[in-house]
Image 1 (cartoon, rainbow, N blue to C red):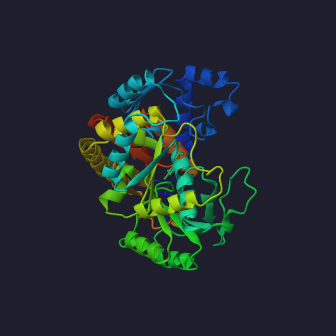
Image 2 (image 1 turned 90 degrees about the vertical axis):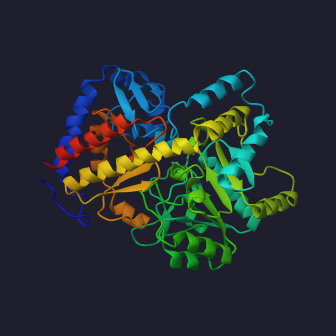
Length: 459
Ligand SMILES: Cc1ncc(COP(=O)(O)O)c(C=O)c1O
């Protein structure tokens, strides 16, 4: 055993072991992927060699070039196959190219892709969303980022208040005003690393720790906050689950202070067919889900309560003529509507979730056993079909704790070591998803690869 420190002092793994795992995996990765290396050299006219710069943030020395993604498998250009538990960081939660979505897209391609007018699927999609998530009124956008931006704008228009509140460590997409955190000195600040942001975002954005109802009460008490935006469980800083009573308190405090509650289910759609909201009976005023909601096609939805809709309509009717600041040209397109309808009717079904949950049960049990056998001070957190290795001995309660359980070098080494063993997990932290297309054999391979990697780190 080479465990050097408990949670308070670090990850439990020595830097030397981490570096050795990383260099061994890097050599394997590069040695066995000549076409991948050549592809990296050929992308001369893409900034940083990739179509979107996050793709250089993966642990790989050069980006993995995917020739084919089907079901829960990837094939790279060198012919290596992977069990995909990253699934496009949730965009392909229901597997790559689900057949009903592929068929709907093929059909719709012959009938028109972008018209800026409703298609016959529009009304059905509205009905399906209400039946599934409960809110009575919906709009379609193109990314979860956009849906959050529009929902926040709607909240301000409806309440006439200027501020929003986020929880420390949250991520809601590239929504400028949500990039506020509690800095090391305990004060709110712009998040580090933001490019091209000259504004002090704390002027209009407040931030408190997740699970801290007293801090929330105080932050909302001057009644200037239009909206609290939150995931029901935080999934972007490892995984922070709500403590008992948190959601009841959150709803109550928002209601008492006239602040709207926006629940962002973009990742927690893993909880069940109606997201965490339906599973746990939450009552948001505004609701957002993107990524997987149209089976991998760029589409997102945002919903609102009858009261918010009425207030938004009133605000709309009493404004000067001009741009609303909400909506984009391709939003609500026939393409999106066809994919949304196919996903809601035929892909994100109760049966699909039953399979996803059964596999996630096995992932949780198998991975927990690996950590226990290695006596690592880590644990497995879970949100339905979403499973995460958290590098802390106990459940995290807020974003501050999540920061101290984040070890970028170790995470990158593990990620790459898993990848060269044919298993892809999320690149930003150790997150794994079970999709309807995932097989039991794939889950067993994930557990075995994890056991092997952990052994290399600890034996
Ligand atoms: C909770 C949550 N909301 C919104 C987003 C933004 O999604 P997109 O990048 O598709 O706009 C993300 C992305 O990770 C997310 O995790």
